[in-house]
Image (cartoon, rainbow, N blue to C red; front, side):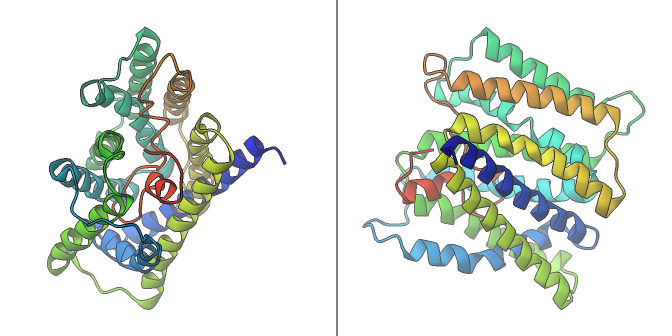
Length: 319
């Protein structure tokens, strides 16, 4: 099998695992707060991450070289998870993904002041068109009430974009273990601090679902790593948009959801602009920093390590 095809298929499978992970988030979100779901998901994921980190035998400490950027990045990752998990509990899956897909557009904008990225007319137009796609999905004034779920989804996309750009800024100087561990530790303590106020008893089957979340998240991560090793980023990165198909299918099967015309049209606009930005960044003369292409992970939630950090640990490129 050609390596590009293998990379595309692996990434499709990985994003299928991620989409299944999000179905579990939505199912649990019908009963529990996003804080509790994040806490137990992160707790279940710690053993897997710990085993991975034990293999890092390089000398160094856990003290970050850029402490303030590391703190801001950890806070933004935890914020992304809390808002994203809440959005899943309030909105149809397809609508959540449509708004989350605005993250590459926001990364492109944030890369201008934070990375010194120069965005030309074509990418600038693509960003504007993509943001118009978000407005189509939200359709303000067209009969859909703007809810806290919509605000949470937008906030998750913005915080996820900030986290991604910070990693692009400091990733070359920080150890992978620092990039992996700090958001997860902050998630554990921050979400744990909310437990006395939001905790609801969880039966064994629901605890098992949080373990399933951790497994699916790590399967998605491993699949994405394998995909990026088999094929270039311009092949793998657009595959994330396949999640909208999984969302439509899962929403119909599990939650009796349907994709309305506005969500479908807005998603098409957002995905089209996102793919165009990816392809433009793949041209060396266009982008020096390639902030979107080098964002290997999907939205970082603080419950699982970044794909780019794993790639670096195992000899991949920086991100």
